[in-house]
Image 1 (cartoon, rainbow, N blue to C red):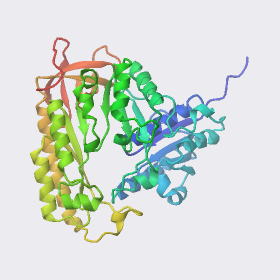
Image 2 (image 1 turned 135 degrees about the vertical axis):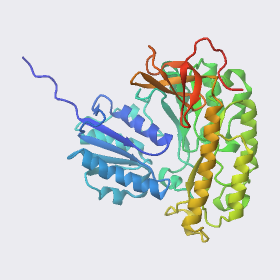
Image 3 (image 1 turned 60 degrees about the vertical axis):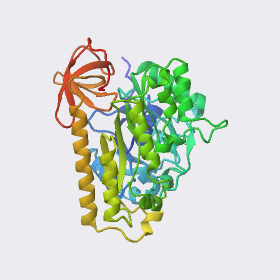
Image 4 (image 1 turned 30 degrees about the horizontal axis):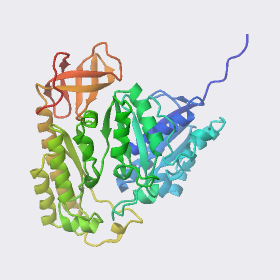
Length: 440
């Protein structure tokens, strides 16, 4: 008898932050596929990858806590730390227990190479490394709704944001490569999520210059059938042209996230976001008209230095006046190296907490109302998991849906007639006979 091959090292993944970060983590898994096994949840691992976030001081603290937890949960494991916090605070992370290597997102291919080297595996082939966004040729099939990152970095100059410091200038996947990857993922999945750090800037750095609209339109022309979900995109950059063409409008998920940050023009100017609120208002109303029943969300930053009570009231009033389904609200956090870190006039912490709470309460009311409006309608949900006889998935309009599980496999698209909601998700039954997709 001959001994079998030695067991491969086991890798555990912990990823914090945005969809772009999630795409980085999944691309790294693709880059080390075949050399390591992904550890089952709760099982010990030989290596741990902690993909960090640094968008706020709280996110950076949570990233350090995740590293410490990884060291406790996997004694003796070698920890590789990547992500934005790894770029901004590498020495602080190297000092944490168990950390064997730190690699920031400005050199994303380095993280996969570090993991392979620590595992004693051969390096990746050149074709898998050196991509301008650090993406492997295809994301692994870990998720029912894969994320495709087509752009990284940011050239904007928002005063509060440390992301450009961590990720560098904007850069795009070459156009033909992006179209090919979108088509390949769309051939195997019912939904693909397009993301980027500054998604609306996709293609500006290419020669010839391209756009996000060009990318989706070309994929549609070549036969893309999977639905496409766009991640957060600046209001003035939303590709409205896609909604004006039948073949592309049919692909787009009716879920749009348009960052606002503040409803006060003076605060927006201080933030380095010129143009006032007009582009946001115009985009929200145009999307609502062209995508009836769409879930439209926004980002809001509370307590920016110099923000007055009148500024806050303007933000509340603007949000109340528009058909927004949800608000992502977070308090201002001074990030080292940004212009805003040195600005005077920060509101007292208790004032910031009160303003944040008011806007989050408004968001909760809007989301409950949006969910309640789904009752009696049919939503198309991608099956993401089945537990205890109950299937769960995400509808095109971003609503979480639960229903009694049937024979459909994970990743399938199921039409569910919504009966009710619980304030967080909707639930109902499969409804093959219903024809309409969205509430009016």
